Structures are given as C-alpha cells and as structure tokens.
Image 1 (tube, each protein chain N blue to C red):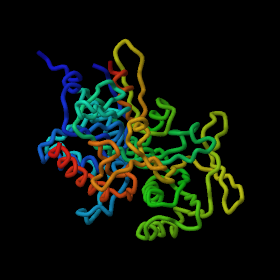
Image 2: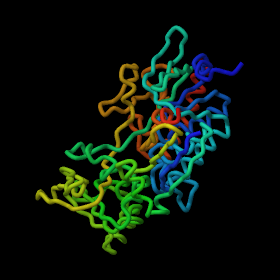
Image 3: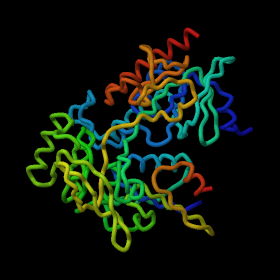
Image 4: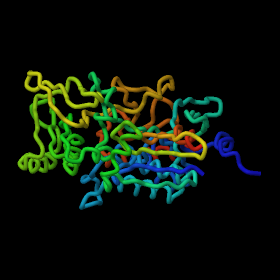
Length: 81
Length: 323
C-alpha cells in the first residue's frame, strides 16, 4: 500500500476530486491543509516547484517518490500502480 | 466470474452519456434518472465545473444567504447520484454516430469506449489565457486561474488580478483573505461586473486593500533574480508602460468553450467554438444534445445552465421515446 500525502486548501475543488479518486481506489492519505498550516506551504512548493494545490505525493516501498500536481487521474493511476 | 468493468461498459448501451459533469449535466441527470433513463456522466476535471471553483454564489435561487460554489456543486452531485446517476472520471476525445445501429459512440483517452442512444454535451468552458510572454513559463508558479485553489500561497503578499468582469471582481474580493494588497488591471475605462459586486468592491478600495487601474493591460510576465522566480507584470496603463512588482497574478478575462474534442464529429460549432443547437437543444447530429456554457447563446450563468440541463433532459426523453 503506498503512503500518500496530499497538500490542499479547504476551498480547492480539484483537491476534492483527488480525494474522491483516491477513495474510489480504496486508498488512504494524510492531508496537509496549507491554508490552515501556512508554515508547511514551503514543503508543497519545494515538492512541486509551483504555488498551486493539490500536490499529491505518493511513496511506494522500494521505489521513487511520485509527485502529482493538480487533479490528473492518469498520472495518479501510474503513480499508484 | 468477476465482471470485466471495461468490457461490460463497452458492450452496454446507455440511454444517455453526458460529457462533462458541470451544473447543466448534473441538473439534466437529476431529470433523466428520475425518468429511469440509464445515465452516465464522464468528467475529466472537476465535478461541478467552473461553478465548483467559484468562491461564492449569491445569485442561485433558493439560497438566500448564498453559498460556496463547491457546496452548490456537491449538492447537485449528491442529488444526481441519489436518483442513480453514475459519475466517472474520463476524458472524452471523440464522438461518432453509428448510423446502422443508431447509436452514438463515445471514445475516451483512458481507453474505454461507451455507447449511448443519446449524448448530452455539457463540457462548459475554461478561463481564457492572455497569451502574452511569460504566461506559460510562470503558469502555476506566479500566474494562476483559480483563486480558491491557489490564493492561500499569497498570504501577506501583493497580487495583481487581470479582468473587470464578475469573476475578476468576485475572486479579487476572495483573495483579500490572503493578500496584503491587490491591483486590478481593467482593460476598459469601467468595470463589467454586476452593480452589487462593484458596491462590495468599493469597501476594499476605500480601505486601501484593492486598487483598480483602468485602461490597463498586462503585456508580459517577468521573472528575475538567481532563482528566476516570477516577480512583476509589464503593463500598459493609459498608454504608458509600467512595471508592477508583485508576487502573483490571477487572470479572469473571459471564457472559452470546451469543445475542441468535437472536431470531426459532425457537431456544428459557431465561429467562437460554441455548440449550435436547435430549439430542442439538439445539435446537428441526431441524438446529440448540448446545454450550459458550451452551447451557442449561453448566458454563462449557473441558473441558466441548470435550466437548460432540465430542458435537455426532457428533450432527450422525448427523442428516446420517439425512436
């Protein structure tokens, strides 16, 4: 099972779509609300080289960390496969 | 034997496949499912479309205090699902008509192809880009099109908003939650936004939080320093060039219909790319209907889109019954 961390804001509709997609795949995630914890914004910026959410970080044992910026089902599917 | 989902979907004939799951399709789905029509919605991005990323909706009837676009979209989604609508993620790349079987084939980027007696095109629209130097380079890292997604990155920072319509003003007001200072660049000498929004904006102008620059256009987005990060907008204000230092820019300068995938489908578009329909909201291809923001003549209002969705659903039922 991959470890998933998602950087979001409360008002972000694309973030809701990533959550819905992960739920459809029976996956769990840790959510970091950057509007609630601005001190963690820099983590999202460093991981994605962007100032946008959602940023989804997928780590599978023994493989590279994947970072998906935005709601991109094809990229998410590849990252969890 | 376990069901092969893709194979079963491919062989199944839906009563209606809706391309896009914005307010128009969701409203249509509430009606078609209540008529027991097998309804599948395919959405490539956000369920609820642009409405879902809008900070506040104050003009949708039935909500006297207003609500967030996301709340409205989620309510519509739940209501459609309550009656049996199936919503899947998928990017439709092609529509074609099987004249022999009198069906519409819906092809997706992800692989599965769907068959339907009817199709509703409710793909909505997306925000127009400025198409100026630096826009692509700094997209998502300085230049943005979604305030509710990316505004939180600009706490105590200076922002520029480009546009003078409802979206630009509404989202500028939303961005004051985070930004210390906002300059709005308006191309003309007045705002196009609704009076009620202009009145609300005035409060922020009076407090010095927002400044409106008329007769102003963004000409280029600039970066610099060791890291090459975005840091300013080259603008033309009253015909004079000016460099405005800022941390980010949000662009709301109008909408473009999401109809590019219809090329070669036989569905007729108008000169701006919107889908042409007749009075029954049927397109030039029999069995293919369209409603909402992507339809030629659309008023780009959520209430209009849901109304058109309901109309399209009734016309779809009539078409199927008359088949």
